[in-house]
Image (tube, rainbow, N blue to C red; front, side, top):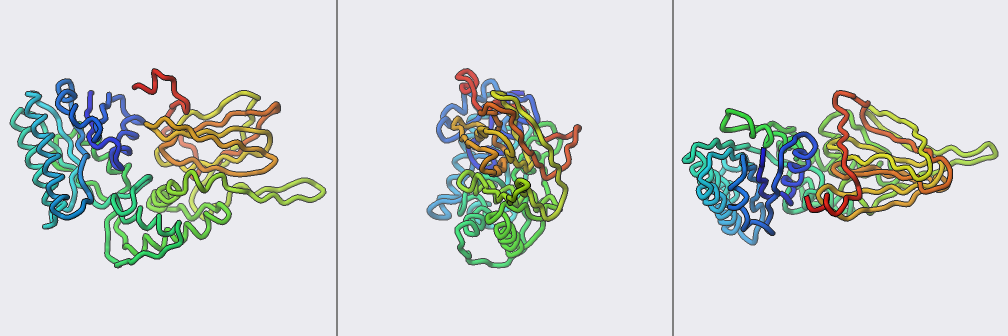
Length: 372
């Protein structure tokens, strides 16, 4: 299926593109501000649209409302011009149930897009989303969670009103959008975690107290804790890494504690790698994975999906450190020394062959791959 994905470089757009890449064989055509004018041409050969592009914040409420209406009008006009029966899945919001600028703008856009889609015999699906959070959210724009994460890392205490809130991770929102590609329903309403604003702040402080000083992994006994921790540690990358590990040495040799985990599952493994060999070349959607070289020299390389820049960490067993792989980043490890490399790999969950959460992708892409 050929899918046009609007808002592809934004927060939810990146997560949706990541999930489409990992779990489907769909041909995805990303649309952002840079190529918005190409929307009509792209729809001429598309089978479906996932519409995420929107305006969350602006100079005033009128600009928020107007911005969302204009984006909706553009897409409705492009659908009408295509003359084709398309499936359109729109990232909606629970704010349409309330009288505010964002909700009014999204509802007006939704009505225009649905009208254009249905008039040509297409199928329109609204995915009504609650508050979202996740990796690479922009503070003061995408989510209060991203704002809190920046504050806790910066040693600040934000003004907090303790309200109840329903939070959905961006990967779960993305799955609901993907589900919209083959449902007969016209509305999908994924459910998130019901919690409180202060409870979220307290969890982030708990993570920060243990993770930053010594790299201790916090209690990961629930899915919500895992998702929130992944969002938190993504904001620390790459500046916080590598994590220095403390060797304890005496006449017998050395002891290094590579992982401390306060709760949940966990699995450790040791690998040996011959000189010049590279391991990895994959990414994850939820898995927390730690690399710790215990003997030899290595280069650990990472690249955020859909971007080109590669980050390299030169590491050695002589100065033990750990690097935790952020989700959605392709990573590998290469033996750069002359001897066998020994590496400890740790994951927060047991390996499950039926759901390994491991998706192949090269860290360094060829010129041809970069153009795709």
